[in-house]
Image 1 (cartoon, rainbow, N blue to C red):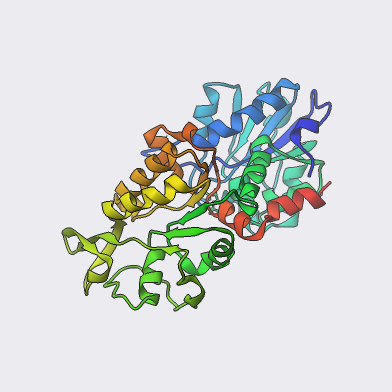
Image 2 (cartoon, rainbow, N blue to C red):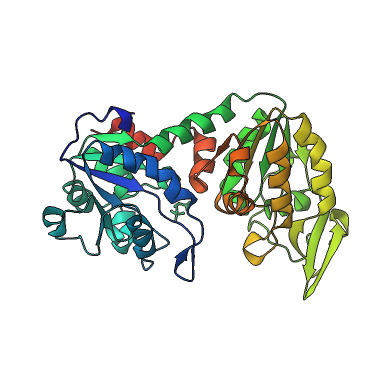
Length: 370
Ligand code: 3PG
């Protein structure tokens, strides 16, 4: 994989930067600019070398617009927004004096997701070089991730490299190593759980994932979210596993704290209780390495307390800490404690896939590309 640092003489050339500006929008405004901020050093470096940039990204699904991101970039750079660019190339690329051409949401064209060859070739024709600075989208085999590198010389962006370097530390961790996993969709996380049960010394499971473990232990989970199919869990019910002992439970409009053994019909587990996080403090303090992805509660619906409190505890510890995932990063950003962690990944699903497989389609594309 070649680094953008070694891109050579690009004065007067066009560079296509695949960014990940898939940021949360609140009432049309950017809710959290973490991913955009992280991309700026690469943009500045390439502009500093005299190149013009064509930047492509997705945001949400096909109907969401990147215009709010364009306004954000306009406060720093001279930017042209390119609304339509397929099947014909936009004239503006030849005529405008702008430094940056931001393409509208790549997913507005279904050819992006289907990795259409004609589409990849077309986008590649806008530029002389390609830089992947979209680690969070690099688990997707989409045209802008794996298609374009077939046609023009391709390089990894600074954050892309930083992600690989830092996340790879989890494959050779310092011990004691505490792995913390939250969120939902256990079925998609099985390979990761398997791998890190073997690498870590202790594994704390929170979020909806914990419900599958409670079920495997024969506990009642009421009406809580569970994986559709019962997964083979026997290998994980060992002494490395730490499960929440108390839970925030919703039943109708009632919210209460229950011991994990006391959950009953109609209860919906919504968050990890205070006591569980207090108890986890001793595991955090003795750890030399902590890897955390995924919220501990139903974050989207306001059950954020355990996630916030865990973030603060890890931030205070002296362990090397690597964290990631959309909601996890949002909680860290709103607490303003980003700098207290060894590394905050920009990736959600991509972080998990990289940890499970030690590579991603986007990495392979750079390795095999032009
Ligand atoms: C993310 O937010 O994890 C990335 O931008 C990928 O988005 P996607 O899950 O919509 O492909």
